[in-house]
Length: 285
Image 1: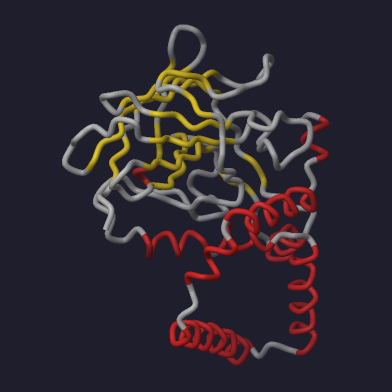
Image 2: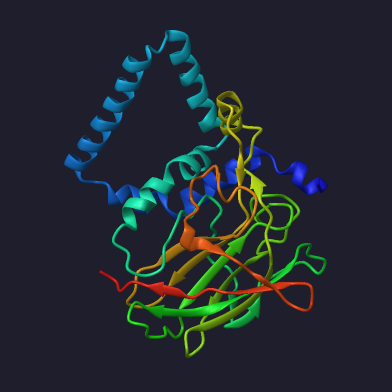
């Protein structure tokens, strides 16, 4: 494991994720839940659910105070985006995508950054000259649910490197490394060269790591490619693609793996691999 990996602390990663959320989403999210009755219903039922857990398990004052201390430390570590995206978001996505007719989606996670470099339909993600990892050609077509090709669709991609680290969330990595926004051709097709990412542990030296250790869980996510696919007149699709037979596909800490999202790259002559995966977008509601 490289020195860079050792320096990617929970505090640094958590602070980056919190700042990114504040910049990109906090204002819009706050405006979206301004309905008083809706807030009343959700807040009341959430608090009541906590009350029920306390009564059923006879929670002691010592345990309650330990919880208070831990909740404070999650905020101090900047790990609320990490906590919510790992243990809560997959259920929100399940509800949001229940009526989807096209490709399956899954969680976005805390490491999305808008504004990645624009790339043509046949391209390579930005990489270091000595980028480690098995070369991968990821190709396919973006269509609507009726099969019509979506020319000019935008396929945003981001991923961890061979150390399991994300650019802009770990030190020593170029800003847009393994991040790009690919525009499909006239037939909705794309072909992107990248590397196969590595499985990685979510940060474990902060509050989320303390929870994992105390509860006896593991902290691993399987290797995956992140996708956010958009086209005029269609709903945006957010997905992660996992690798068949990969570590932790069956026990992802974030519970985000779905069978439809598991890909099976095939070896090619240059020592790399390739996979074809088509993406189908629902019409905008």
